[in-house]
Length: 165
Image 1 (cartoon, rainbow, N blue to C red):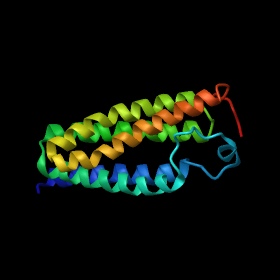
Image 2: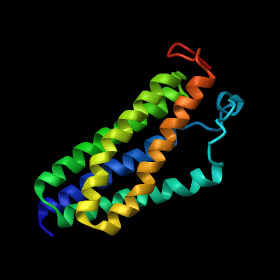
Image 3: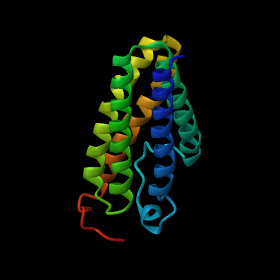
């Protein structure tokens, strides 16, 4: 593996590590505010959430290294840019949802996180069909999370950016 491939792998891994740590700090499901919300009927149980995120982070890290080792510099650039933008949008959702409780805007942030992840899915399939199929649960999770965000927004339409806990 060349130095540039290693740099791509390290950068991607760093982005994913920032995603994991930051989301752990921003997502506050143990607050009174969150516990008081009526959950959408399609929200999975917390055990599913606890299982899917380690899988997602491991899969994203594995995919980053496979893409780094097998694909071109153009793929590397698109991968890192899409990963960064998707992660930033997902972290923006976490902050908007759990802190100022801007539920609708948080949903919009997840739309962008989901859209920015589409090139990651395509590139994963290009690197390896097995990797592409392994990436599908992450993409589906983003779609589900987006629908949940808008479900909360519909249930609490007066929640806005100025709301405080």
